[in-house]
Every structure is written in structure tokens, then in C-alpha cells.
Image (cartoon, rainbow over all chains, first blue to last red; front, top):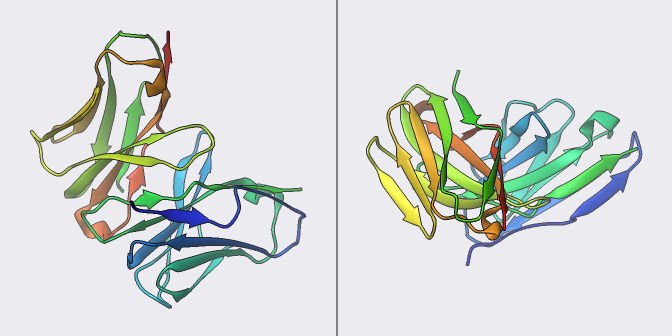
Length: 112
Length: 111
């Protein structure tokens, strides 16, 4: 059974804090993704990674960075959290093109 | 630019009342179309992948179909447990692994 896990289900941070969101997959997938989901805006891609130490910007990378030091782990970093980064963050992984993405349970981040 | 539009935005059904959800897409070379189910506060759960026009996939009360411009998700005799948001996403041939998602259809099935 495939599994993608995220480090926290709910997180509350203050403006200006550095925030780490972690994602781990146990399917040996090379490709991993970070999305945010907001009402009325749907799922939007922040960053993705094709391989260890590789990263590519998605559609909304501003204010975020990522790290992929191990194949199974993909981290999203908010260098200085702002209130407009309050959102649901979803991690996903896939075997490759043509294959479905598997999603984690999500992290609901609130920045106050 | 790849675009995905889902309709309706919301759908209220009585238990047993069959209906269809629409996913219209514009993409340069479709590699695949994906359907997901998402329960409130959870991550999307994969349902189906369709690769070419005319293809159909079924799972329990759900059936997905694909044409060159749109996909339908048919829900036959729905039950309250089918209540969820259904998301459609396309993968373009030139987009690598990237998916473009529609806004989703919220389905509520009342007993």
C-alpha cells in the first residue's frame, strides 16, 4: 500500500518565523511535489523535484524554497512566513510521467 | 496554456439519484487525464487515469469517460459516502510530470 506522510496535520506559526514542512514517501518514487490548496484557487504547484538534490520551480515559488537530500524526503521551507501563506499544503509523489500522483494527508498551516 | 474547467461547482443529490460531473480541458497533447476524490481536510485520493479518447474506467459506482475535449465522471445510484470533492487534472505531453488541476466539483449526497 503506497504511503505519503507529512510531518504535521496542523501548524500555527507567527509572521516572520522560518517554517519547515516535511514529506516522506515509501514508494521509492523519484518525483515529488509540493502544492498549496486555497478555496477558489484550487491546487497550485509550488516546487517539484525529479531526483535527489534536483528541484524545479512550479507556478507559485515566490516565498518558498525546497530541499531534497534523500530520495524519500522532500522538504518545503518558508524562509519568513507571512499571513498570505496561510493555506493547506499538500505533498505528492509519482513514479513518473503517465503515472498518477499519490498525495499525503496535508498540513493546514496558519500564520498569525 | 493548459486549462481545466470543472462543472458544476457543487452538486446536491438524493441517495440513488445518478448524475454526471464534467471536466473540460484545453491542452497541447494530452498525456493523461486523472480523477481524484478529496474528503474535507484530507489529501486527494487517486481514482482513475484515462489516456485516450473513447477510454472508460469503472470503480464501484463511479465511471469515467474521455473524449478529445472533456471527461465525465458518472456516479450511479450514489450513497452518502460518495459525498466528496472530485478533482480532475490533465498532464500535457510537454509538461513532464506536472499536472494542471480543475477547481473541483463538491458533491453532497443526502440520504
